[in-house]
Length: 226
Length: 226
DNA sequence: CTTGACATCGAACGCATGTTCAGGTATCAT
DNA sequence: ATGATACCTGAACATGCGTTCGATGTCAAG
Image (cartoon, rainbow over all chains, first blue to last red):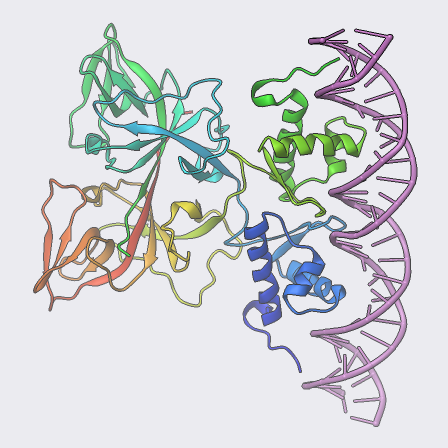
């Protein structure tokens, strides 16, 4: 009996194979072999698997590296994407000192709890992915930067900044940490809140001002009641 | 001559191998074979590669599936992570109708420009990853939800919500879209802005109220001046 | 009924690839 | 000197795994 071809020219066997490849990749972190696909999709012959794999390739659902063991990958919503695991160094709050990236320390050799995985294509294209770290916002003190309690801010270590960049700074004058847009003016620095209704802070150039890093991303996980 | 062991018991050759595996995975989307590692790290014998791979495994830098071709993966900051490609359906602004996920439409068959890749471990653990879509915020109208112009909000399609969840709603009364925390009270709905200094909106239960989805994440890319 | 496209099977072929082993060469402490 | 340890070599071996091919079965069109 002929198989029924569903949407996009894919039959149920195509879909089963496609699904299995994804599951397998999820579980073993590497693609399955032709024989493994066959066993799990009730296909007794490797040539039949190859047959379907060819079709899936023509159809644009997978890519294959011929002659290479397990050289296949699915294309689409669940495709493998380069990610960066960025360590969460600690909390950021108005009164607390800012955690910093210590050179020479190997963050995250094992643990994945204190980190965020971010797709590389979400970062600025020219960014190399180095000197990145993240902070977890505690309290409402960053609310003028449109950043809430619990938000994760992704930072890039930097001691200087250009006009218009959002920076994390330590203000010895007030003894507090803050996130502001940075502008260098004639004889002073202007620290502008993200919220346009709020007024900037001015720091004279002879006053101390410690730039700890640039904010490159903010991630907010909104709770879902379960 | 003895190799110099650097930090964590890793010599330069270990690091070279580790780096090569990452690069290779980056480029070909599957792990390299032992022989490929050897060729690219100037190691003439497969047994030596195996020798180093064993050490890297003992050291916790990689994992191996013995007997399986290309069955190795690095553990650490650049490890492969499950991601979800979420389509960006369109803009969200006060005056515009809310874009919605149309059932049966295959989003993202090819393009990756109109999507965000999000690590699965950033989503709520119980979420299956279905019915997700994203909207790009236009304008300052969501500022009371602590959401800025240009932010990406990740949504889950839903027609109902539980108390305390942030929802995207269309308010026929005002003819506008908005993002608010949702609370059902005796005879009315309370739509609470995220910003605690702002007042809620009350909607009587007999008034129309269209819940389009729940907000599960907000992503803000902060511009970097280059 | 014949033909041909499609789906399937089983087996054989051969290169790709992980594994193992018997030995080498340094460097260093005893 | 003498091991001990770490590093390296080359080759052989066994099997994992993609590829290919002839044969069979099914169904729709001619």
